[in-house]
Image 1 (cartoon, one colour):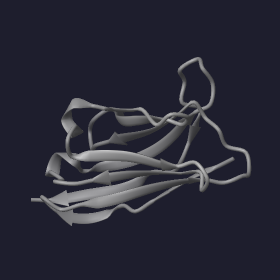
Image 2 (image 1 turned 135 degrees about the vertical axis):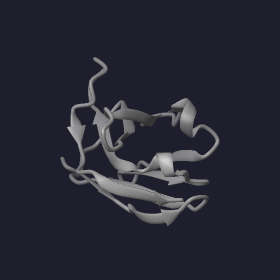
Image 3 (image 1 turned 90 degrees about the vertical axis):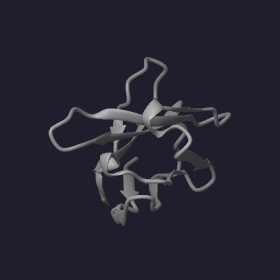
Image 4 (image 1 turned 45 degrees about the vertical axis):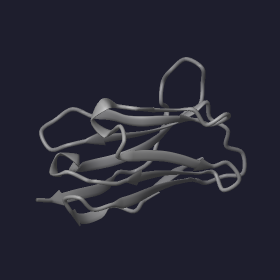
Length: 118
C-alpha cells in the first residue's frame, strides 16, 4: 500500500486549497489517517486526524475552524479542506496512516507543498 498526496499549490491569504491523499491497494483499513506539515525551519507538526471507522476528527488549535478533514472509505481517500489560509500555513503537507493500535503513523505519503502569500 502506498499513499499519494496531491492538491498543493500557491494561494493568496484568505484563499482555499483542498489536499487529497489516496491509498493504493485493495485492502486499506487503518485506525487513523493524519495530516502533518513541516514549515521551513520548523519541526513537523500534526494538523489533524480522522478515525477511519467512525470518522471522529481532531485538529490542532491553529487550524480549528479553518481546516476540515474528510474521508471516503470506498475510494480509500482522505481530504484536507483548508479555508481562510494564512501565510503561516505555508509548509509541506504530508498524509500518513496509523495502521496499528500502538499509536505510530507508519505509512507516509510524499509531501505536497502549500504556499500562502500575504
